[in-house]
Amino acid sequence: HAGLLSLTAFKNSTVDEMITHCKEVAKIIPIFGFYLQPSVGGRILDFNFWRKFLEIENVIAIKIAPFNRYQTLDVVRAVAESGRNDIALYTGNDDNIVNDLLTDFVFAGGKVRIVGGLLGHWAFWTKKAVELLEEIHSITERNAPIPAEMLRLAVQITDANAAIFDAANGFAGCIPGIHEVLRRQGLMKGRWCLDSSQELSAGQNEEIDRIYRDYPEMNDDSFVRENLDRWLRD
Image (cartoon, rainbow, N blue to C red; front, top):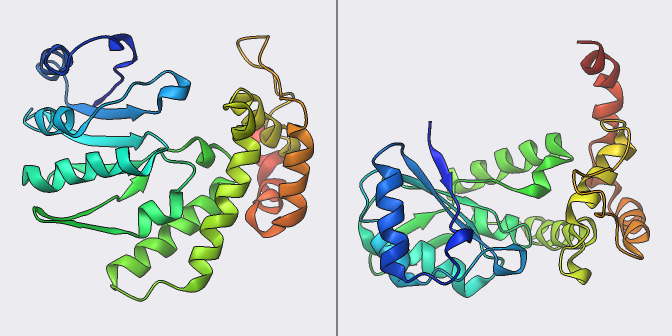
């Protein structure tokens, strides 16, 4: 077991105050760092924070989800320079999934890879997500050239994520967007949220329609249809 450690309650705290908190949690349970983008409640965690965070022995992994290239590099460079090879990195950057997973991050301290994802985007079309991750691992494990098709797919996935996560409106419709996809597949009866005020933004449903129309190969609707009755029965 490990604890995914959010620092959203420490918006005005210093690095040392946050590190002290992390150390206290790590005395009880292995911890999984979490860099959440500020636009949905996170805060900036700079390179200095991550270097100090990685000095905590009971840190085992980090989810990197700032939706920002510079801030993502702060984390992976900190891991490289820490000298630790026991840290598992996971992307939470739904806007850059494929590139995060394909890239060798090379710094003076060594090479770092992001090995998987903890992604809202993988809450739907999950069969295709599994296939994608397996294909990427096959490429990276063989140190094979990256096919141009992978780079095209990276753009298409980001485009799909923008629609479903409602990037145009600061991610206001993110959760309803995910629920809408699951509703269309029959996995949910509606797109209701615990917060009843959360709903799709204006035009978001049409954007999801566009994604279905433009990238039909990206969804796993046929797989869900083949198995839905059995899943619901079981």
